[in-house]
Image (cartoon, rainbow, N blue to C red; front, side):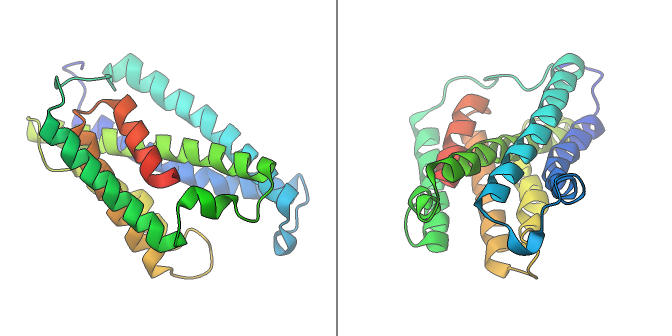
Length: 221
């Protein structure tokens, strides 16, 4: 990490990572104005186009965020805090089990089974490509949120500040993300998922490869 990087820079990157989810509304605007989609009869083809267009927008922002962060902050790093102990693996797995319990309550089965039901293979692939990018931005929120808090405190912390940041942004966003009024369980479950993901990130010693893998399994399987 560059010594001159302030906590506000990481906090700004955290918020910018969350802003990626608002790009989906830009995708909807493009679909209405340029592609002349009718939101009242959103069919399978329209959903595939929507997911792919959102992924394109997300890809551009993801590249910009990572380029800036690596160049100006030398962050994120693969594994800073050393070997992952057996106890850490067990806590991470327990959090993963908690994530799967949440998705099971939502779907009454594995999420991947529920998502595949009633979809064509192309629809399913487009949906899951969308999810893979969504998980990437959730992880970025956690990473930058944790780093901002630790730089502000001047020390490493066992408190999952990154998970709390994700809960207060991505998690709370899911109270209204579907545009059908307030969905209490959707918001609460995503906030719980965010905190559990933040704990996994810390227990996996901030290794972003392992963290992405665990969060993706927790969210997508």
